[in-house]
Image 1 (cartoon, helix red, strand yellow):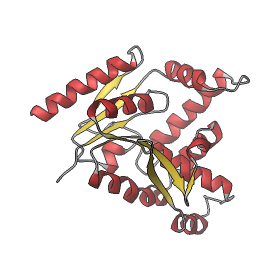
Image 2 (image 1 turned 90 degrees about the vertical axis):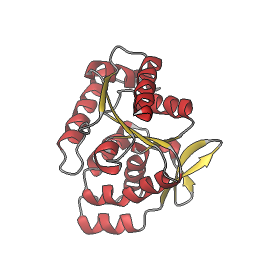
Image 3 (image 1 turned 90 degrees about the horizontal axis):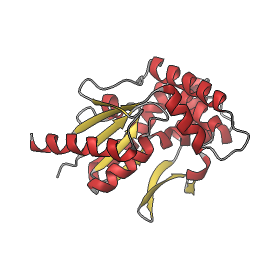
Image 4 (image 1 turned 180 degrees about the vertical axis):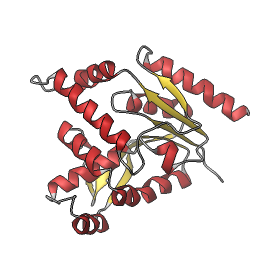
Length: 222
């Protein structure tokens, strides 16, 4: 039996994570944060002090990498060699390293199987940056979620607990990541040709989800 796959791509701060979680709940699907996989790679690169610019060192590291998603209390958590690393992959430092290291074709190839294996057995909503363009080009419905840079930076700033946080720095890092993600040679961030583009700048989370549900319902009737 074939599964139904929906993809949501877009830049950081567009609201992908919150919206994907809510949409998957409304659809009764599994929610998959593929960005967590790349953050997991970055976390282990940092922990193991790997020079990821060294091709041989990176390839050896990836051969021994053991990343996987496991369900805990109806939530997918990221495991690395049996250890739950979900709470350690959201720092700005890991985000920047994930953006840089994910440009390596070897990294993206190593994570393809994990993502596609999930899709073989479960209806799922996949959040990422190349879900609709590379990983699931035949997805039932593809979305590209974006928002104004100032809006995205403010959202990310509000999420950060550190009292010393600096919104200017947050925006600058986000702008660098946007550039890196969109300009990389391997699977750059861009809408799939058949993606439905939604600007979340002035929409509430619920409004975005309702829009998506309308498009999905139309696609299912087609």
